[in-house]
Length: 160
Image 1: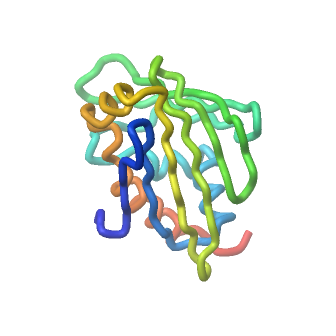
Image 2: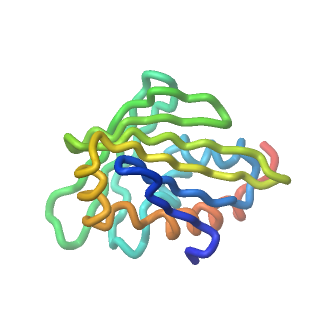
């Protein structure tokens, strides 16, 4: 599963994940910005979490809020932030504000022969913040998430 996904620490504060997915940038962008699609692929099954709610206002200055449940916790987990830049269908930049040391994430979607090269760049506020994120395992979900994204794209109509 991970052979098509690369995840690399590119500096003390940066982590970059890349994968070419089977769909045009327009559909890939929609999968990242429409709640009904995001809920079908974003939560890695191996983490044992389920989406409880997903709110996305994908515009510059807009916000998002994802709420997950986990069998080991009686309290839901919320992840939220704001969109700094939204350029359909090629670029999203958002904050991760659920914790003090959250990254700023930039996702780009580049057309390559009918497929899309997705590059996700997380910039953390410090080396320690990235070290903590990596130690927690939260940065290791990309291969599984991209696999689920590919599965979702395979089931979507190519035109629309």
